Amino acid sequence: MSGLKEIKVLTTCAMLLALAIILGMFKIPINSIIEIRFGSIPIAIAGSLFGPAVGAIVGGAADIVQFVVKPTGPYFPGFTISSMATGVIFGYILRAKSGKVSLVRVVIAELIYSVIVCLGINTLNLYILYGNMASGGAAGYFAFMLTRLPKEIVMFPINCLIMATIINHVHMIGNKVFINN
Image 1 (cartoon, rainbow, N blue to C red):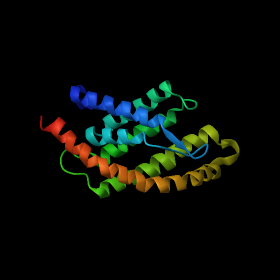
Image 2: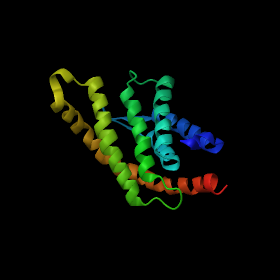
Image 3: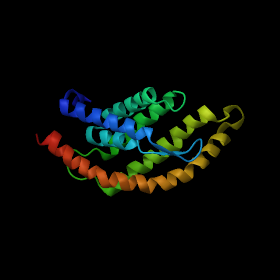
């Protein structure tokens, strides 16, 4: 968290925040509760470069600013929590001050992100917003989850490939900029 006092870290976080907002605006809608987005990638990068606290700040700010700039529905704080959790998860698992991030760590981070954030928290958020909680209860939540499961299964290897492709390059550049200067 103290890294945010450095100009290089602050400007890098601002650029990642802007990238997260822009990428978050582009989506591929599948149906009313399933859409494919890539806005979590810059949040994951912020977490992996600067740790879970900074990742959470970038994630929370990205969700709030994106809603202000281009709302796609009602504001719901659960999605802000999801974005913050994304930064925390990738910050804890992919944080590497030096050296390479292994493919195993990328897969573990993506798996935890997919299960906890995408299938867990985001499904709950959508169920609260669009489901009928009074009549559905836990069964309705799991029905929502089952409709979102194929998307997560398809996106898991895609997200792993994207993250594995860019994360070591980002860390290599980050190490040159933030550590060796």
